[in-house]
Each structure stands twice: as C-alpha cells, then as structure tokens.
Length: 142
Image (tube, rainbow, N blue to C red):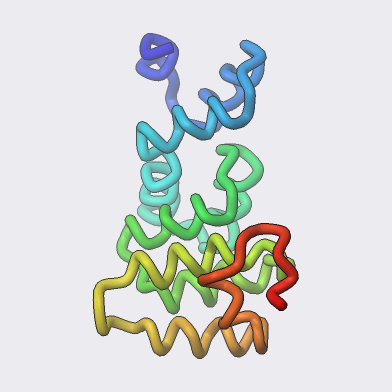
C-alpha cells in the first residue's frame, strides 16, 4: 500500500485506487487519517485559491472525508474554529453537527474563540449547542 501512496499524484487518486482494491471505507479513512491526507488536500486547494465551499466538496466527494475530518483539516491549515463553523455548518443537517462542533471546541486553544464558535453554532442551529458536545450519534438530545 505504501508504494501505491508514493506513486499517486493526489489523495483523490489514492481513494479511487483503494476503493478499486475493495478496501472498506473505514480502512480507507484510517489510511487517509494516518497520512493527514485531508489537511494536505485542504492546504493545497487553499494555496491554489479555491473557495472553501469547493474544498469542502472535494474533501467530502473525492477524498472520503467525514464532516469531522473536514473540520479538523480546515483547522490544521490555520482556520479559526468559528470561521470553520461558518464554512461547514451551512451544508450540514442537524444530526451531522456534533462531530464538527466537537472538533471546533476541542481543537481551539483555551480561552481562544470558544464563545464565538458557540455563537456561530447558535446562529445556524439554535438550541443544538447543548447536545453538540455531549450527545452521542443517534441521541435525541433529551
């Protein structure tokens, strides 16, 4: 697998090849996470001037990123948690919010912009803030 990784030009190609080999999506995600593929792709696309919405689409559709992975990738390339939420939250359904919010709140330094991140969350999903950091997927929040 390492040889295949070294020969590819981009992570999207690697995802196609790994899927072609019949690997499970969880295994593909583990490989991508280990190699920081999502942050690498986000960094490259950002350097080439692509809008954040296109970077999100690329990561989700072509590089097998879950929403939490997208959130981490944006923050790894220097985006503040509140700004990442402004980019990602408009595309989410309510049940997809918790991993993104956990990434934002856990990934920000102490006393940074946690309050701003919570305000952004409240703007897009009023009332979700309480459940976003404590509920597990599938929980109703109550």
